[in-house]
Length: 369
Image (cartoon, rainbow, N blue to C red; front, side):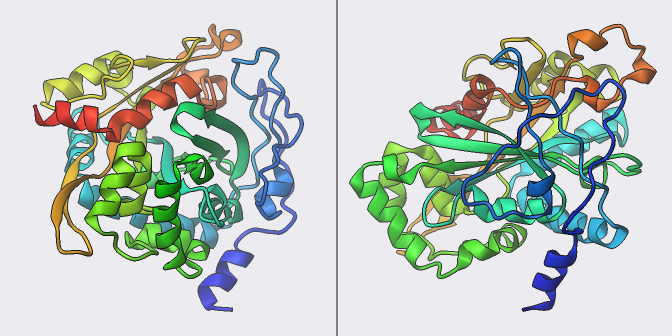
């Protein structure tokens, strides 16, 4: 066992105790079982709620204990390096973060980080999830996207009490990991994906390292394979050339201090600075309860040289923005009393379905127009 592997295995206590529920926090209920995910520290501690309304967000489970100092430092360094790869490839995200800091001050917190995977032969959600589970994250809820042939699971972080920084070094973000249901694709697309997965060896065991380094765990693809996948699933084509790289990070607008903490004003701020927002389903994506409001930029593109020597532009990543409004039972709280657990939690299939389109050909065409 390598030193890094040994460290990851020991980073969390195997039987971390649940913290007492915070005042006003909803009660936890039955655990979410993620097929194939080994029973790590976070898995044994998790709880996912039974919502009274099927459209309501799942109540929050009691968070795991905060990470020991050394583990917290290691984990944040790891996700900081994932972010460095992301920002180096996506100048729009880097510029918007700089603009927000110059306007609002250093108050940026991330709502969630998102990743895409191939749901086949262990290369799906679980390949990345185990890294986050080892550092106290809890599986919370599965979402399904039948038209896109996708499923996703989101994970809540260990307790965020006592953080002092911002960005990656602020409150730990939720993690959203999706996977392509490869077996539902055409035979031709399945064969292409299987061909590359076979060249990866056991690369799925090192998904987090691949994300940190920005490298593919399989052979660099040829252009014709990328084109075939693009015609059936832009998600498949994106994952083939980007692998486990961070797909997007999300600014939590309500944690800002100036007028752009309102997502409508934030969107105007972004557009006034010359950036195009994803227009699929409207610029602002709103959950049925009205409490989760999201928007995103159109993805950046960059030149990529394929294995057969052809150089073409490919979609990279984008940056998202989210405002979580107060749950009805907490609407009378004073601003200084409001904590994150008083706000709408979870994700919404309808919103996420439209956010996925940020890397689609239709949106990229709008960007270049």
